[in-house]
Image (tube, rainbow, N blue to C red; front, side, top):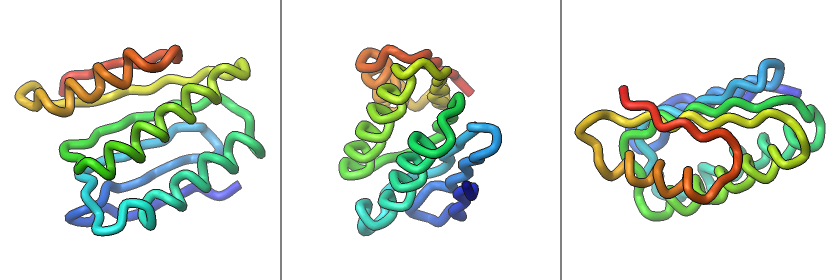
Length: 124
């Protein structure tokens, strides 16, 4: 299975998903003009990983801004990751936030309350 690498733009985060290690990272701001178009290959990669690879998964979210449509996709994505962990593989999510960024911190806290996998809130 191939890795997924999408370069960061002004309105979309960098995506670096490694199929061999299960280490995945999303970094930057997310307010693409068409969130569905941007996140479709991201969900496709995760679906393929879940069905083809079936290994541990480690996610680092280092997002500094999300618009409402991006929040919807990230919420669905976190839910899918959490469900994947219920088949017996290790799933760990690290949600990074800056000290002064209460919105991102609170969003991470909301996600943490909704999942059963290991979810770390990390202040950078």
